[in-house]
Image (cartoon, rainbow, N blue to C red; front, top):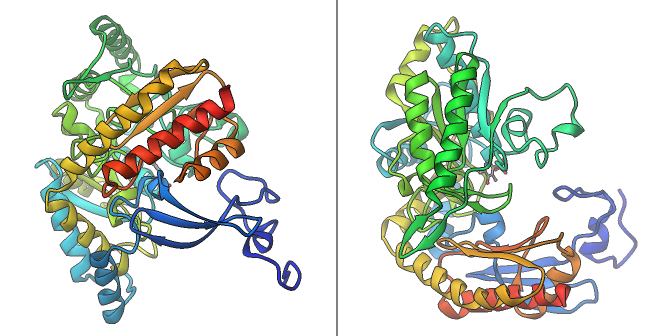
Length: 443
Ligand SMILES: *Cc1c(COP(=O)(O)O)cnc(C)c1O
């Protein structure tokens, strides 16, 4: 066993032993986390210094209630005291059924049936497989392709990668391996004005015309259309016109194509409404949720669908939905997720998210005057500074930590998606550290 030498730090032992996301083996982690409590992360730097910072990332948008939340801790440990995992084939348990009931209650009424997956990417795979099986069941087995959006992100497994943006999604790195799908242009941008998302009506009708045309030409070979409603996350933090979702609903209905909303990033209040779909009052045929589902405690996602879609599968040759993960509906994860949804159900989140939105709007505004800043946008508990060049990740991260916040920018985007229980002062600290970090690399 490599030990990195006697007295080696965790950071040293980590290096070349474990991979980090999208990294080379020899890329060092910047900090070791030694504690996480409320909205605060305690970080230990390579030089041995300790930094208490406000978490601007919610651990990749999942820890909406912060860390060591008393009620989530209690739900998790109570379930661990009963049993931690049992197989879901042939067996069931209260945590799974209780969570499914909550999800069906929370999501739009037609969504009635729940498939638990162990990560967001897997829930997307399940949604795609469901759509393919559904088309076979309804006598349209030739429909094997999907329509997706440029700039979309749906996960890192092969099926999910194939419906993510062809350039960002690194399709070129896997030639011949990924299915070739149909892509619509990125929908036109929208801005928050007096609580509504507004966009250029001409840009919207031009986009809808392109969508009409693509469906006219390709509907006969399309099983489903998958989009992140209103906010494209990892594909560019792009806020877009809700009218596009209304158009897609109409096109999906007209052409017998399933409309799949990937709410893994947008779900559970992040954009200021409970689901991204709520901005357009559109109900999809299939919805995927994940990330914040367990309040960031454990990995869990779900695919939720309409009754007629679920029932159609009975007439396929196999008669069943062909998926079943080992850790399906894990009791620790589903019990914690129920506790997280109960916290949301107390109804404090709209005020919290609105408070974060206001604080970010105020503190990020000065970034507009910095040369090299292309755009500043805020939607719900999401704040973004878009630059005209790629971000210097190391410098931005270090400057932000010096200013009291943890950020993890990507490409040309310095952004935050903080936990909902951030106070105004916390959100301002994050916003100011974003502006300082951006000023630091541009000036
Ligand atoms: C993060 C994300 C996924 C993938 O979820 P994982 O749990 O990382 O597999 C899929 N879709 C969207 C919109 C996401 O933000």
